[in-house]
Image (cartoon, rainbow, N blue to C red; front, side, top):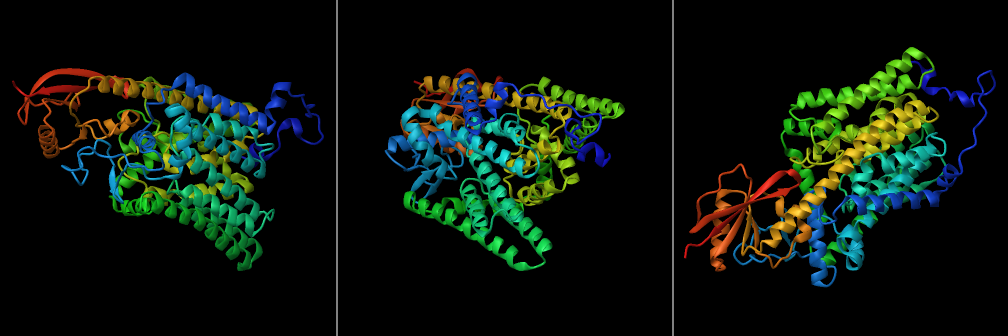
Amino acid sequence: MTATALDAPPRSVRPGGEHDVPATPRPAVVELLRRPLVAALVLLLAYASLALVLNDPRGTLGTDTGGKLATLHMMERNGGLDPDVGYWAAAADPSGVLHPLHYTYRVGGKWVNVTTLPMLYAAYPLYRVGGDRAVVLLPMLGALVCACAARALARRLGGGSGWSAFWVVGLASPVVIYALDFWEHTWGLGLVLWGVVLLLDVVERRAGWRAAFGAGALFGAAATMRTEALVYLVAATGCAGLVLLVRERRPGRALLTGCAALAGALGPLVGERLLEQWTIGSDLRGARVAGTAGGAAASLTDRLHEAVTTTLGVGLSGLRPSGELVVGLAVVVLLAAGAWGLSSARRPRVVAGSVAVAVAFAVYLVRVSQGLGFVPGVLAASPFAAVGLVLAWRRGPLRLPATIACLALPVVWLTQFTGGSLPQWGGRYVLVTGALLAVAGCVALHGRPRAFLAVLSVAVLVTGAGLTWLSVRSHTVADGMATIVARHDEVLISRQVHALREGGAFYDSSRHWLTATTDAQLARAVGIARATGAHELALLEDPAARAPRELGGYRRGPTQLVAFVRPDVKVAVVTYRLPN
């Protein structure tokens, strides 16, 4: 690998020489899309079109979204900013062990199922106007913020006008998946990216301590929604301060930058705390952060496994962690080597690069052929990030954002919640790392259309698979829950921990639903059903499990199979009745 292949300017713009190529006028459509307002509107319309055509707003990418939709439904019923989802069986189960929405806790006298309030309160007016469909506008706007930040960052790093980073991050990365689901990830990511942009301006002396204060405020606002933003705040501020210290050999400006950033972050965090105290009377987000920190005590083996999954996991079935690591690393190497080879003017390297990209493309085709599902690794779900991880170190301006992206990873791996690494898209806890590296990848390939288009083809394939998966999942969850609700069971007991939370858009605190995952909890739930005078109950169960013939005096009746999550994945709804 030579510096010439990657660092020399593209052939068409080399000064002098026989290989000069006159600049080709751009088509009118391209020129129009280079106007910021037009590009922003087109991207927003693309998101809206995808959401309207592909998805059912009552189905979600994950159970956290279901909990948010359930909370919005109850907020509308409560008539204001009250996130209490209620609990019909609170008298019999005051600790909420059997609450139908998993992860529901009693906080300040209220039953709360969400971990952050700003996103909900911002979405509430939209929900009042247009229901579940309208609230998705909020993550779409967050994704637009991400794309604009990516462009601003690419421009500062030498990526020309930055439009390639705008469209790649906006439409060919995990950002587009999270833009179509009511989650706070796009806003958290967008705020952090703009914080990095401001810190880069401070490092390059385009701005002073006020920009550092603003960057801290952006990181703090992101942390009210995404706890890992605090990790990136420390990594970004520390790297910026270190660069200033090395360049200027005096600690004054570095210390001022760090103090200003930390002071800026304090405001949104304090504001969040006051908001929680005012609305629910307790520190909801603080408890979340403490729980995250406490999760660091999980076993090292689990941590390593989940780190591999959320960073490199392609989602191929039947792989052990070691196999997942090998395949993920191979994909990263193939994509980077392919981009390097296709950036060269030498035919052997171009051929080798083409083969490398083709092999990586084939790996993704194998993954798609195995069926719809998650691609959990950030480098696997964002091929430009894989390229950026390898090529960023060869260009000076790219090293700072790449260092921030990588430096934060071990701490995020150590503190992210365990047990949910596989059912997520593109490593949702490390989306910032993926976006920073994706921008670096776009800049590294700036002016090299052959390499850029090759990597883009892989990115479009994997992102398209993600959009298809979200579409199928949302419709299947919504249709399955509609079928279950239409049964009008007197009491419904779910043996699957996340099923009823998954369908949170259908939640109503007056429905007699319970979640019981253990046999002891099931016996208790059946006892509650008897106490209510129910003559019939339904058990939502895995079809592979053998439903008992009798439950606390209720005798087993007919079973209905309902598609849930995926058309080929069924849940069994078993009816139980008291004998006459």
